[in-house]
Image (cartoon, rainbow over all chains, first blue to last red; front, side, top):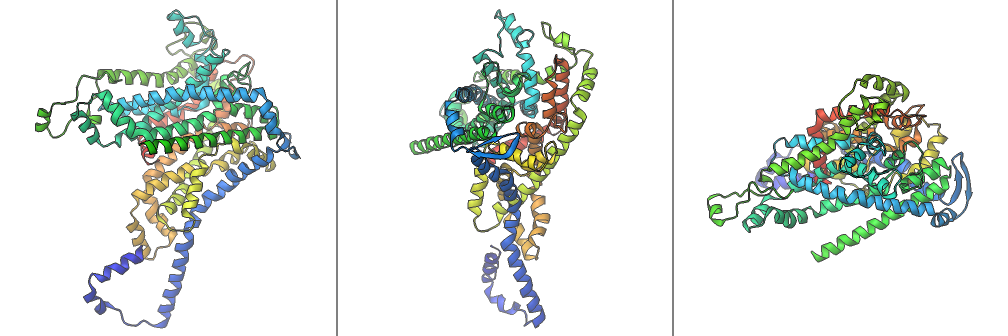
Amino acid sequence: MASDAAATAPSKEEGAAPAQRPPARDLAAERRRARRSRWYRRDVRWSPYAFVAPFFLFFAAFGLFPLLYTGWASLHRVELTAPTDMEWVGLRNFSRLIEDEFFWNALKNTFTIGIISTVPQLLIALGIAHLLNYKLRGSMFFRVAALTPYATSVAAATLVFVLMFGRDYGMINWALGLAGIDPVDWQNGEWTSQIAVSTIVIWRWTGYNALIYLAAMQAIPNDLYESAALDGASRWQQFVHVTIPSLRPTILFTCVVSTIGATQLFGEPLLFNGGAGATGGADHQFQTLGLYLYEQGWVNLHLGRASAIAWTMFLILLLIGAVNWLLVRRLRKSA
Amino acid sequence: MLKTTEEPAITGPATTAKRPRIRAGRHLHGGRITHAVLIVFTLGSLFPLVWTAIAASRNNTRLAQTPPPFWFGGNLFKNLEIAWTDANMGTALLNTTVVAGSIAAGTVLFSTLAGFAFAKLRFRFKNLLMLLVIGTMMVPPQLSVVPLYMLIAELSWTDRLQSVILPTLVSAFGVFFMRQYLSEALPTELIEAARVDGASSWRVVWHVVFPAARPAMAVLGMLTFVMAWNDFFWPIIALTQNGSPTVQVALTGLGRGYIPDQSVIMAGALLGTLPLLIAFVIFGRQIVGGIMQGAVKG
């Protein structure tokens, strides 16, 4: 691009150009210039690779290699106690998984907890973002406060919620008692435990998603709202017919990110068990795939099976990605 | 959320003739109900944190009574002290600072370099490599824990901090984030001018790219620090509670034991969260701005 600029600049003042031509140089300077320009060209040519190299080196060592090796390990019997001692078993880890009721249980729980946590989270975030988009007193306070759960770690958040969801002395049952509702055994019920785990996820991520929606809302040109208002659209109609369509890419983005997060859910269900291990409750009622992988690998010491679960999770994500892509294409076509 | 009708949008064409700008969209003032809903939401966001502090200032017996306490008791410092010694919290906080700091520094440096190359330089396979970067964002961390664990076991890195620092030292999101930022914030003419002056690529990076990228580097650094501070899945596999834990690993240890003392557990949770909360109070505006900026570009 630099040469383009240099080539076009003199053409504007062609008449003056010949007068500016410098006289012939001596040979040494010429050679020095040649050397420098060769070095310069090499620098321009190779430095981009040097700049991207650290990322790809680290990614190859700690991302790509493990990814492939996990696939290799999933075809073997490997124990945690002797990880280098591998015995080829073909697809047995996978076929075992299909017959394993705990795997299906974990898959089902991951799916239901994913729905219970993602749908309300994104809906609330959308509403809150809409409100934050108005001119407000103390708007920065609201935004920072909405983000504080994001600063709280999974561990800290889950430990507090375990206490609040306690059966006998928990605050939530106490509040329900005030409303005349009998105490709920949050941890041991199937649905109640999943709702409780989802609550932690919702609490941590709603504000974050609200800010992402808010950013997208602020990028919507205000003319759209003005002309809608001119046409007599109410605030609700503006929200439905201007805001939501403009946010479609962002909504899709958050859906994808939340889906990935939900598929990997691990810390919340692990700690919600109150230190009783990776079973996800007495009846595995809130054991997710991530937790099941951990239990198989680091409690039952079967690294091969854990690898098979990991690859299955990856395939599920790819499937979701493909469905998502098809949906987007369908939406674009119809639009 | 939609009942905010205090200041209805002006709809009559007669008024618009006089007023060229109509109040609509984000120029509308939030009404009383808007504020009320936001205050309820804010209380919901803050309450669990406040209650962590309240529970940490009580004792276990008081937490096993109804109604639950809603105000501070006098045991805060005692509980903090127990949590500090029982959960190895001093080591844990120091470790987490080192880990999160190194990861943030590495991510910012390498992401800026790669982001600059992808945004402004021409080289072969550029698009293919960028696609690869985006593709790596899809890979779940679960997929690599088994070989990573075998690797660090082989290197005898279990319970060493490098086992949690090195695998997360680069981030695809960071590269993407910096590329998006630099392609807009860094004028190509500036690079060319430096080039014409005979500056090498490294000088260009040092004197042109880094100064231009500084705001985005700060944002990426903060986001990465928070993420690394709160990371859970890999540290709990690579580190142990009694060896060299990060805060999150140490916290899981607090929950166990014969009769878990809930007030001590809450004190530990408070200790582990406090540094980030303080940072949020100080840098809240920048962090909010960074997340929103990242959202629009991403």
